[in-house]
Length: 518
Image (cartoon, rainbow, N blue to C red):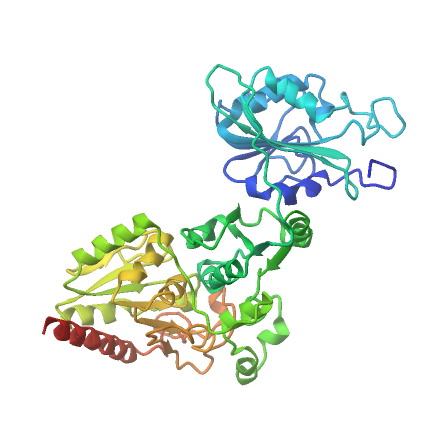
């Protein structure tokens, strides 16, 4: 459909955003951003717009001089160049500041689809009427590039063309390179699984990729940059769509999913599959949040993995997480195992993403273990919400903020025991036969660890546990007087029970070693 009075004349960035989200990573400039930037992380540049981070007169060819050469990862511009007399100079400046291997993304009105200058309905601000070839011919005079996408967009209320151009570093020689156009997909046999969420969420979803691949699909994982590393090495994923979280505003996700279906075919949307379904949020579902504990438990005490597969339309139950190692990781982890072979190695995840995952007595339990068992050593892992730097003693290895998320989750494969609250590390341990002790508070064994092998998890004895709630703030929980933490993780998480379960696993390890020695 070409332009008409009935078609939209605004919100141009929303028309293109869904199709380019995977390219919007790193330092992004939105040049001529108007009233809405392409994504919240972008640096918007415009003369008067409130959405702009930098205000400047872009009709001046030197307006981008504040940016160094090769300094940004993506230059995006929508319905802007046609308003500039000297568009070639501003295009050259866009190219100058773009890093090699970076992307220039342009969305412009098409000469054959939009009223030309002087015609009825034409935009009075337009200085040019463009074909895609006009832009590419201009680039040919000063750039070496690979054309990734060149599409005319005339569906629904669009009347534009879309260019994605990758910068290639060939020095001062300008070469016309062969296009590297995106592939076309067989929509009948392609499936996109969309899941952002956290590390633990991604591990719960992880078996789905294998099941879909075994059913003959070309499998694409649409994930956030934070959770992509969970899936590194997964042989059942053919392709990734990786995007910075919140690139697509939550209010526009439906349009994004529709866009995915148009291009790829089947889309399995698992966003917020557990949130708002089995884990209730106070602001979004106040009535469910305030249900009596017993009623809430009877409704939401359902295994997360089974529920995810049901939502995905796949009739399989009983699957545990899957985590795959790269060859380099296998070698390094084997060296780790050899180096520490004389010890019973415990990985203790000291914290999680919220207050009810912060066990306050870690040091008490670990000190007891190290004092009582000369062949136990402990590796502490955790995020930036906990610091235990002052705690130092032999056979205690503090890896908090030293091992990143990937290192922490794959380390579970070579430990003799993993102790963790409800975090990605616990779910990662669920992928392997390593014994694990989950410190369960808002989830139950039925929810989380039902299918884990060698599971010694402990359910908090707090009267409100498992609460089946998403807990974000301390004031959402009853707190103990000693630590100021939710009672489920402090007052009602027994040190004696944790030590007893660790002793069980340790004794089995000891017996196995003695048996092998004989």
